[in-house]
Each structure stands twice: as structure tokens, then as C-alpha cells.
Image (cartoon, rainbow, N blue to C red; front, top):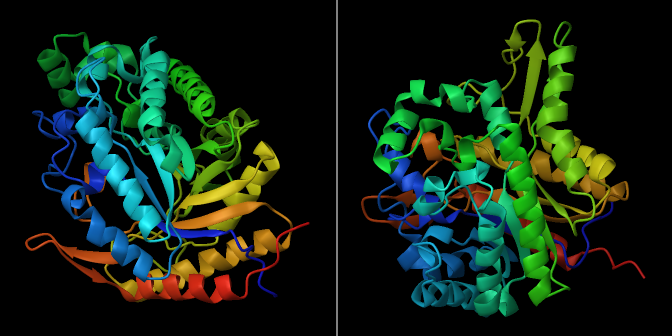
Length: 419
């Protein structure tokens, strides 16, 4: 196959503010981590101190040969109390953006990556009727201060993930049942609200949540475009490759519709859709099917299936009908040889999509660093760069060198742009 990657194809790695910055103390996720009965394995704490070490981290990423860096802004830092915006925090993120440009990295900026200000949770979180307008106001304020430096804008990260998590029994409680869950009951008591109104982004999978998230995405897109109409704006979706074995077809079709297709249909009219895929989810007559006998697995027993990315990119192109950007893709493993093989196979799938005329704008691996992985804590290792959290020393892995070398090689031999 000739090199199908266009000259402006983005090669990068990704982080999320709460997972790497540390001490995001005015956020709802920090609040949930410290509650009695929390489902978080451990608190995020200092994370990998990217908040203070961003300059050397960005230099390290650029030095690998990559061309983009996807990171998120923390709404809870920028608007720690409703209506009060921190110029100091906006200036901090401006310096992060300037560092990206100094090192030749296109900043792919996510305006919301799971964590919200704690005050929003008191107002009903991601089922609250005011949330779309409040999120749009925040996006507008960000654009006023930072908009000239943003390369690509992502409004919401993985609004569909809660529906996929719920299929595995994580979250997904109906409002009337939340008071029976220790974490939600403790949150409601601390906040002085009814447990049925506690709806953080990452665990909100009601129909009300779907409509609030969609309205927030549309309102945020309009707010961003009001400042820079030419800026490419989309949201990023957690799309597993949904498959079935005999007896599981009906379940697979329902989950595919609920998790993937309706969010892709809602993406029509956007500039692009971000696709974030890690593997496949297979359904049988009894629900989730185990990995096939003899299938390769990582250290946690999960199937390694990089072919899923090509399938979800093709699904996005078919259903949404807009350009696609791979905004996350990676493997949780302590064995970096597995990660290299996974990345190579996944990128081959992207190349096949491009060769077939699918408009794919970039490949951004998850994640830049071994970092805080939400309810699972620090155990899963997705990073292309290892971090010693006792010393905060960074050590690039072979997978980082592989991806950077691949990016350099294909940038030199890039396909010409269409006329």
C-alpha cells in the first residue's frame, strides 16, 4: 500500500486534565473520590503533576516526532464558583497552548473531559436544565481568552460512555434508585440535595442526560463558532466495536444503537467526530461473551483486539457522514511489546480506511503518560511514557519511540493534498 496519510494528518498523544494535572480540588470527581462508599479505587492526588510540568512534558512529546497534543481544560479550575472565572487559570492554559505552538504541536483542546465544577453537581449536573447554557457560557469565556491559539476544538469527551459502562453494571442507576447506592447517597447528603438529582457526566445514562449532553454540545459549538467560525469543532465518542455470537444478536443491535449509532447520527453537521476505541464488546445469549479461547490478552485478562478501530472508524463514516479523527486509541498493559504491536495494527486499520477514501484527520494515542484512570486508579498503564510517581520522572517507552518514528517516516512520504 502506498502511503495514504495526507500531509496535514495529525499524529499525537492525549491526556485529560483531571488525570494528569493533580489537585483538581473544586471538581465533582475530586469530591466523589473522597466520599464514603466511593467506587474510585484511590484518589487522584497529585496525579503526574502535569499542571506544573507541562513545559517539559510538551517538549518531550514534540521530541518524539509527534505533531499534535490533545489535552483538556478544567472547567472547575476556570470557573470554581458559578459565574466567577479565574483569569489566573485561563492564563495558565494560555501558557500551555503557547508551549504547544513553540514546539510545533497542534493543540487539540477538549473543553470538558468528565470532570465538572462541584457547583454544577448541586444544580442537577448533566441532567440539569441549566447545564447547556452554563457550559456554553464557559466555552465562550474560554474562547475570548484562548481561542486564537486552539488548533482543533472538542466540546465533550465521551458523552456516550455511561451507556456502555451501564451495560457492564457500572453506574446507570435510575434517579429513583440512586439513594440506594452508597456513593450517591453520601454525595446527596454532603451537597444537601436529593440523591435522584446527583448526575455527574461520567455516570449519567438517562434519557434526560442524553438530551442535556446533546443540547450542551450544540450550544457549545455555537459559542465556539461565534468567536472563530473557521475552527473545526466536534465531540469525541467512546465507540466499542459491538459484535455478537449466536444468541446475542438482539442485545448487540440494541447496544450498538444506544451507544454508537444515535450519537453518530447526532454528530451530523459537525466539522468532525472524534472516535475513541480500545477493543470490541461481544454479546452472546447470556450477555457479555468472554474472550475467545486462545485470543491474546493483556495482564488484566482483557482481549487485545486492535482491529476494532478500523471497524468503528468505518461505522462513524457510514453513519455520521463527516470527517473522522481518532482522538483516543490504546492498550492497558505493563508489557510494552504488546502496546507496540497493538498500535501498529490499529494504525494499519486507519491506513486502510484512508486508502478507501474515508476522510480521517488524525491518530491520537491514549495516553501520553501512565496516569489516573478514573474509578480504576493508577493500576491500568495506558501510557506511552512511564511516570515514577515518587519522583515524577518521565521515561519514554518503546511504544512512544515507535509512534513518533512512524509519524516522522510518514510525514516525509506524505500523500499530496487533494486538489
